[in-house]
Image (cartoon, rainbow, N blue to C red):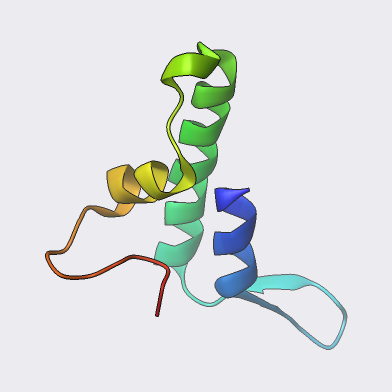
Length: 70
């Protein structure tokens, strides 16, 4: 789910309906998010990370900032 939200926020469709990334960095971050989500799905459900934890791991944390909330 986290990877899908990132994709929706950082892509657009061209006039032929093809999905284009807003920039190469967004596409690279999406790949890292997907890899972590896939890894979490194959591990123990009790120790799996939340979507917010996955984003914090991939993107890092900023003091006083809630990622994805504006």
